[in-house]
Image 1 (tube, one colour):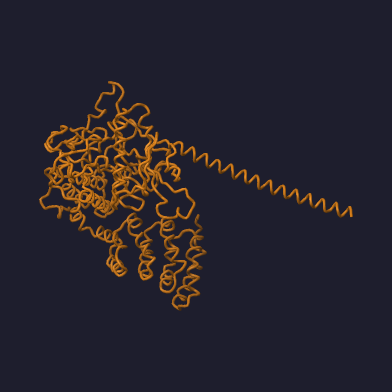
Image 2 (cartoon, rainbow, N blue to C red):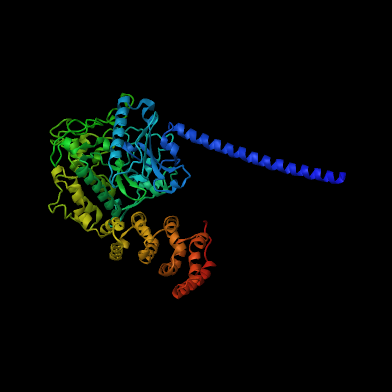
Length: 630
């Protein structure tokens, strides 16, 4: 009995010891979990306090470094943002955004700028954001919430942005000084203003020569010297450092901006006045949109309207009562021995993109309040033409240095651009296209857009009728695809048939962002699956394997899992194409192989036979397939 009791007591003690250990482990895990949670909360609180507890920082996880920059002088650092919520709502469109942050401390520390100048800039930005929130158009960047402001920051939440056009021109070189999101600073060199291209103590690099441009209309505007240095820079996103905009994408983007300007002029009654690389962005979906500059905008009615209307500027941000901009003598013209250099904030748009009537006035005197500084929609057409030419030619239409914005420099640049005398007599519908290709054709149409006389410039709505745009088959096909999803099923099928010879006109970026998305969306339409799937796989041959696996394959996965009949037969016939684009064997076995095996059990004889053939092909190729890192 005592022996039995001792045995039970020992067993009980052993069980109690194990239980205490389990409880202890559980308590330890709980403590560790609590400590990790506290650590995460502390990190979040530190991040929030760095931005003054901005709402957008509390609601979104921000990328550690800026992925783009934009706004006046590219002062806004743009970060990728992902909603912190773990609910299903975070899977819906809108959970990924761009967070625009401007560090006000960078403007006030060091005393480079006067308080009045800083406040004038902030007023300009507040007005800009308020106007953007009111306006709605596919060509205008969408704001998700009103401007946030606290003691240290201005913040905007917008739809996802890939880069500003200023970033694209510099291949991200103007991001090197952005640093971490909580403490970005602008380099302030001996320039007269904070610019997008300059680095500390040095003016912007000289423009590239025209010899570096694409030679033909389908050519690619490739990365230049800036990109060569940017590719190895860890502060610059690789896709931006290696960005190459094709002539087709630039043309398409220009017409998207023209559509936005047409809306502003005709429907909103607004003249923008500040279109430049700093105020245009390329979204994550590849669309080109106006993203700011509305602090300089004036209404057509208050400015006189029409082609030769009167002045009536807003009187803010360097604008005179006549609607002209006032460009003060830059600090770089002052001797460095005379004392500390006085910096200048970007209170006016970059002079290289501003129409002559807003700089020199209608009388060309350049005096503030000069004879009728007419503010008309034609001023925006001038800016759009200058922007388009710079993207095509890799040099500015008006060679006005950012660090030396004077009336003398502007007059010299205007004269060397040949705007008054080089306009051909054939009209906007027939630009002189030389065998040289894109540059000459672009130069011809830009001369109309940048004519000295505002009345000689085309309206934004008429720009697409120019032969330079209208006669481009690739651009016509791309514009047709823009309305693809608006058609009925028969209309979409007919459009796809009509575009059979056009797919080779699209470069890789256009395929990825403008062509494949509507086609992948169309996979949801059963009637068109057998037509669309082979086309998608044909276009996918021009994607690199990583892009195909990361972007195209996830859209194809639902079809691979459920396809039957003729659609499954089409998939089976494309097995070799899948194998060539998917370099990771595990991904191929998880996504494609189940469809092949499902075909073996299909009721249709043709599907069974094709599946058996593909099983043999896959088995034969499997042994020699190289192992890839997944």
